[in-house]
Length: 288
Image (cartoon, rainbow, N blue to C red; front, side, top):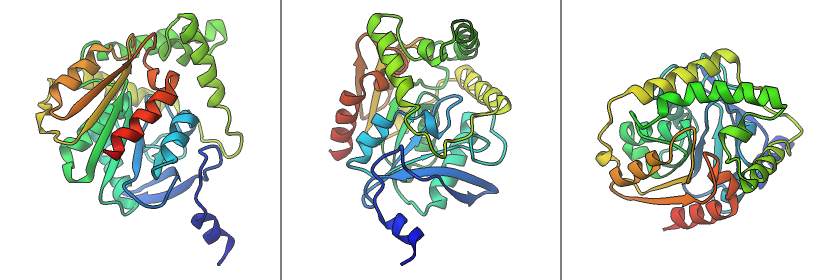
């Protein structure tokens, strides 16, 4: 057995050390990392606006990977994945399905955060047989309240971050209370734990394409979510500025088999602020 084969057979337990692989499909080389047990239904992570592999909170990834095979990937044109970034959520969902199928997977659970939660909804509607369960956080339905403001808020807080020498996520993901500020600093520190083979940052062109896609999603007519029959866990912080929390309540109301979790004194990044509780809840939900 050669060293590479041995490395593949060894179970990776930490996102910090997970090697970055690529798989080619539909003319795209998709970059991805996987960890956790090799058996069972994998949990595919769908990421947020401007994010690459290194933007996932290692506590959330490692926590879920303690019980499940976890796969995180860069969508087309993002980070180390090739191609050009689509300008609609629907095209991003098609790419995600292409990636999932390229790995030979016939059924997955989806964990979508923010933009990833929008992508997850489309996958569940377009490819219902592919999805067993869904966890969607900090997200909203097509045509959801305030989603068209994401561009303005992102630009505003990027400038705010530059002026105060802080990461914009401190403002976009967390509340300005003492708890929120502390949680933001701790989250941003965790994102730096991986020091080797870090992913490429998103390009401005790809970031612009994603903003366009989210804006279009916000302008869409509300879709009928009653066709999503899979169990769905909906989570958010109680004061989400990016995708107003009312959207999470709206999703939970319109999805036939859903459960809603709202974290107190938390914003868009509530699942990262309350990572311990979120992981515990997710594992319990996936095991049902």
